[in-house]
Image 1: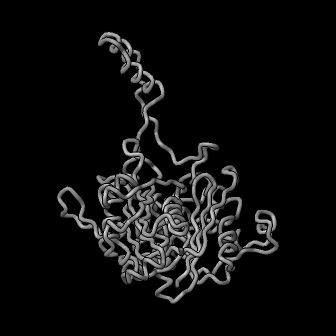
Image 2: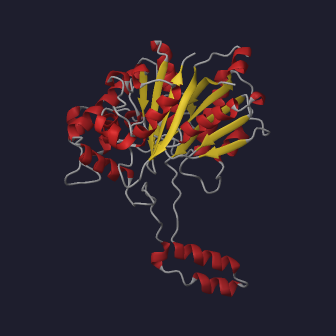
Image 3: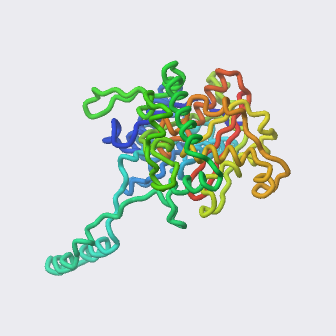
Length: 424
């Protein structure tokens, strides 16, 4: 059986600490899945599986998929949580397609959510050990003696960091290093960031982006209504971006808050079906997954170049070349990462030395890449971005009558994801 995508939706993407600051990833995921089912008209009873993901897991609800499913679908629908860093929703969609194509399901909901307003704060190891020992104490006196061992420094929380466990390098530091090693200048990065904001603003104003978004009435009073992404800077300019100070290398750096994606809250959901089921139910088919690929490189190398390794494999599996791709969506973690990815894709040397190929992979004309902006402007809720990219690409392919599209996502751990989508 062939798997097809019949519907998709997302919440607005909101900068962390703003309009969604009181909503959890589960809350946001429920909103996306509920709206998906309403828009598609498919009854919950028809769903065979839910595959959903997040990156920053809530320790009190580690299987976010089940929690989202219990609130939105019949309780008999199995749910599994996936996590592949920034490519989490992409992996959920790929897993859903796999379930259908091996005959284990006919209807699957896939997606992901993230609330970066709610980062779990860890306690020190000493405090953790002391509290466990105190809980095991046989008397109140022993419990008090145990807790008395705690010192003020033990009470200091462990500050979470978006850093590689193997190298200690943050993603921003890696992007900064990539910019230096690849000769990507500040002006180029700022120009890409400005392009992202301007195109996102255009896509919002003409309704292309907002058509993909579920209106959110913010609880508990439900008086505030959020209908669009709040990270798009319509007032920014090359001059304003140039005035921002580097974040990760304050003396010689080029990566700033303006040319990087912001921490964001949001969720996305996609409905997949077997092609036979979709046609028998009379549902519109947006497209199908022609192929996908996941690749990895040493995190101590150029961390965010994974898409360069994944893209040619996905193209090979689809039986096409980059010349056949009509539109491309690239996750924009940083402008430095996007420009580095494009540079490597367009390099014969990289093809020989890194990919074992005789000639460069290439990429579409830049005017056919991220035609409505990207994560720098729209935001990046880690677990949800893949759903946004997938639906934005499919919808724009329909508007432009494009047969094949390619999406790529860089991810922590030196991972890269690429998927070829086809309209049928």
